[in-house]
Amino acid sequence: MKKIIALSLVVLFASCKKEERVKTDADFESYKKNFVDNLWKLNPGWASNVGFHKYDSVLVVPNAEYSKKLVDFVQANLDSLETYSIDNLSDNNKTDFYMIKNYAEGTVFSINELKSDTWNPSEYNVCGAFAEILNGSYDTLETRLKNFGTKMDNIPAYYEAAKANIKNPTIEHTQLAIDQNLGGISVFESDLKASLDKSKLSESEKTAILSKAQKSVAAIKSYADWLQKLENKTPKSFRLGKELYAKKFDFDIQSSYSADEIYQKAINHKKELHEKMFVLADKLWSKYMGSAPKPTDKLQVIRQVIDKISLQHTSPDKFQSEIEKQIPELTAYVKAKNLLYIDPSKPLVVRKEPDYMAGVAGASISSPGPYDKNANTYYNVGSMSGWDAERSESYLREYNDYILQILNIHEAVPGHYTQLVYSNQSPSIIKSILGNGAMVEGWAVYTERMMLESGYKNSDEMWLMYYKWNLRTTCNTILDYSVHTKDMSKEEAISLLTNEAFQQQAEADGKWKRATLSQVQLCSYFTGYTEIYEFRETLKKKDGDQFDLKKFHETFLSYGSAPVKYIKELMLDKK
Image 1 (tube, rainbow, N blue to C red):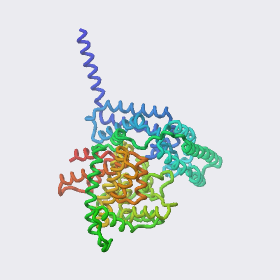
Image 2: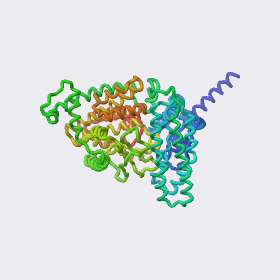
Image 3: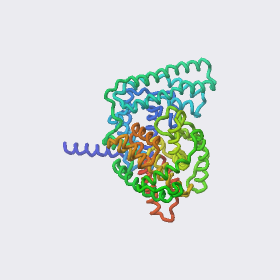
Image 4: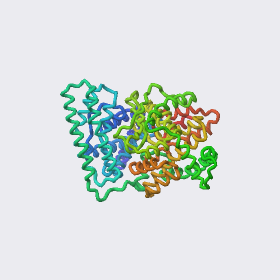
C-alpha cells in the first residue's frame, strides 16, 4: 500500500512538472512583456535611452540595495525561463529566450565576478542621461525640464554611492571618470540655462531648477575631486586576464566562435591582408613614388605608398562638413545599385561629439530606441579643437579622403544608421533592447567590403585603403585579446598598430587608450564581420544564380540586432 501511494505521488509530481513546462508562445509573449516592464523600472536610464520615457524623472542610486534588487530580478527571470520548453517556442521567441537568458546570466557575471563597479569610476556619470533629456524631442520642453529637475534630486546620493562602491580603481578609468564628469558639467550650466530660457516655465520654477543644478554641479565636482585625491596604493590592473576575458567575450559577443578561435582567425586574416596590400602597393609604386628605390621589406613598400596617398585629406575646419556632404551621396549610391532599402523618413544628424562622450572613440552613432523610432539619429564627430598642428595632421592622414568615405559607410550608410533603423522595426522589442554588439558592429564592417565589391569608387587606391581599414578591424581583435590575456605592452601595441596595421601615431595612441579602457568590445567588429561574410558566402554558393543580395540584406536585418549565430539559424530554417 505504501509503495502504491509513493508511486502515485511520483507520477503526480512528474505530471505536474510536465504540465508546468507545457507553455505556449502566447505565454512567452506575456512573460516578455512583464520582463520588459520590470526591466525599465529597475533601469530607468536605459529605458530613456531606448525611447521609453515613463521613468525619466528617476535617477537610480547605485548602492548595495540596488545591486541586490538587480540580482534578484535576473535570478527570478532565469527561474522563469526554466519553466519553458524551447521546442514549444516559435523561431522568433527561441531567439528572444536565448537573448534574455544571456542578459540575465551576463548580469550575474558582471556583478559577482567582473565587479567593474568597484574598479571603474567612469561607470558613474549622470551627464549623458541629463543631456538626453535636454536634446530630446519626445515631449514638450517644459515636461522634459520638470523631469530633469526631479531627476536631479538624487544626484548627490548617486555620487556618494559611487564613492562607497569604489575600492581600488584602475588608474586609467579613474582619469577617464574625472575628464568625462568635469567635461559634462556644461549640461547643468550653459546647456540647461539655454533650455530654460526657451521654455515657458515660470520664473520660480526656473529658479528652483537652477538651484538644484548648482547642487548637482557641486556633487559632480566633489566626485572628481575625491577621485583626484584618492589614496590608491594598489590600483587594479586594467587587464582582465584570460579567464574573465573568455567569459566576458562569451556573454558580450555571443559568437559561434570562442575568444581563442577568433584571435587565431584574426592572426591569419592579417597575413592575408598583407599579401593583398603588397600586390596593390607594388602596382601603385611608380605612380606615387616615381623612380625611388623600392624597399625589400614588403611592409615598407605598403607603408610608403599608404603614407603618400594619405596626404590627400581635408582640413580640420572642414572635417565635419565633409562628412555631412558624403551622406546623401552614399544614400543615392545604395539606391541606384539596389543594395538595400533605406527609409528616407528617418533623420540622420551629423553633430560635434558631446563633451561627456569624449575620450574613447572619434566617431560614433547615437540611435533612437525602439520606442522613439522617428527621433534623430546622431552621427557624433570628434573635434580637433585645441589640437596642435602635428596631432591634427596625423589624425587627418588617418582619416584621409579615401578612408573618410569608408568611415561614413561604417557609421552611417549603409552601416550603423541604416541597420539601427531596421532594428527599431524588428517585430521583437527584445532584439532591439538587448541588441548584440557584434552583430551591430559586424554589419557595419561587412557593408564596407560589400560597397566596394559592388563597385563603389572602384580604384586600386580605394581598395588599398579599404584593406588598411579592414586591417584596423582585424588588429582591434589582436590588440584587445593580447592586451587583456597576454600582457601586451604599450610599445608592442603601438608597434602592431603602426608597423603592421599602418596606422598614424595619433590613431595608434588613441587605440591603445581605448584598449586600456574597454574590454572585449574591440573584438566585436571582426567577429561579427567574419560570421556575416562567411554566412553570405555560404548562401551564395548554395543558391547560385538564385542568390539575391538585396533580399539577403533585408532579410538579415529584419531579425533585429540578434546575434549572428541565431539570425543564421532562422534564415537557414526558412530555406
